Length: 312
Image (cartoon, rainbow, N blue to C red):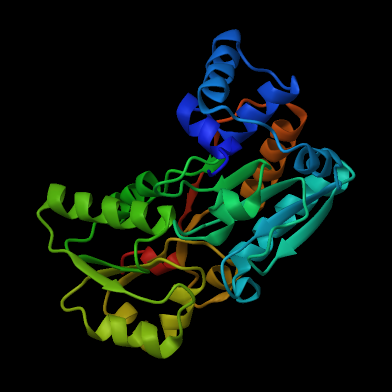
């Protein structure tokens, strides 16, 4: 017979794993109605806590884990995000471990940025009974906390202000919340304005040849929005003649590169450092029982206008 787990109890009660843990340990802030629901679910499933595992989990490590997508060192966004986590950790006497594998992490809690639905560290069998905070939503999962941003609204504002009749979008496969929000907002904008959908797929960490091939696959666009960080700057040399003819160029993720090009590139400031700090703050709140499981924290975005979208 397979013994029920904390995850089974959480599913039956319709709450997060950390809520079940708080109820069974008598810690954290949990309403009486939720407490009763969790205890009833545990009773129905005949759940028996693993004493040895609870003893291990009770020994706090003072460390939080951060899991980033592959090749984070080539992306200025993820470096800034990590610095935001560190900003909080330093002030609260916590260590930070950047996780690169899929083994069970020896940390008190997890932060996952831009996680894919199949990310192994979202699997309770791997992450164990520890709080998980994600930066952006993850389809099919209910982490203990989510830090998110309205990328769709930011892109809609950008497209409105560009005033182009045939804007194009370069975006990775829509397997993450960020890419999905961009794709959905772009298609909705095109439908609302009677514009053709000029969308091309690029790699998550794009290369210049890949970007140039994506541009060649599109036809007749008068504005181009590139999704990933630095992608617009990477394309600028190839697009310079068209910019002189009036093409508008923007990036959905701001970076230092966007400010240093000639012309500087209009971009959406994703506020990655603040996002990392908010993730660490929320995770600390979940660990201390001062934040409710299921808490969502929004990070504001900002459109930065530069010369690449100035009409000539």
